[in-house]
Structure formats: C-alpha cells, structure tokens
Image (cartoon, rainbow, N blue to C red):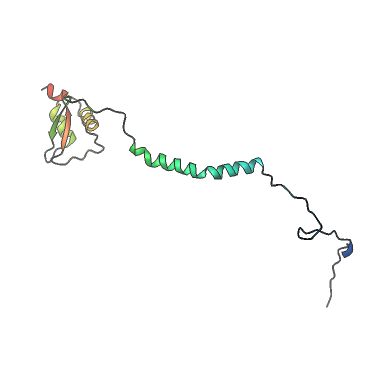
Length: 136
C-alpha cells in the first residue's frame, strides 16, 4: 500500500493571521456599502414594479368603461320599428329602401342601434333613419 503526503511549503507559523472582529484590542476597517449604477437601476425598477402593475391593471380593465365620443342621433332623425318574426337586417333594409344599396342601409341601421351582430329577435325595437321613410 502506498501513502501520499501533501506539503504546502508554508510553515504554519509564517501563515498570515486574520484578526476577528470580536477579538479585543483589534480594530478592523469598516467598509461602506457601495452601490453601482447598475444596482441603482435594479433597485429603482424593483421599487417601481407595484406602480407599473397598478397602471397596467388600470389600462386593461378601465378601457371598456370609457364612453364613446360619438353623440347620439338627434331626436326626430329616426323612426322606431318593431322586428317581426323572420326579419333580418337585410330584409328590413330592402323593404325600407328598395332603391338603395342594402349594405349601406344595414351598416347605417347597425351603427344607429349599436348592433355588433346581425342577430335580431322578434319584438326587438330598432331605430331606422327617418330619411328612408321621408322618401316614400
């Protein structure tokens, strides 16, 4: 069996001594905490993170609560009709304005009634621009 021994080449008595802060009679130099420019940026970002999150939540949830800047149609510029069973926007448009392009009439009825789909239900009241009734 072989034995390996390691020597450092420095005698134990000549090794440097490290003074501990708790030993009496020795004073160690106090180091100041120094923060770099990168560290300041990181701390600023971390401190502002709650504000960024609050703004993001306000923007995402508050957007639907904003009112439109469009004003409603003035009184007397439209006539109300009741939707009958089987009626569609297209059939209403061709009935009230046979000479006009039905796509334009449907778009105008949808805008006036704030319709996002073309689904109508029987008994629903729709506002129709009076200009289509004045032509008759």
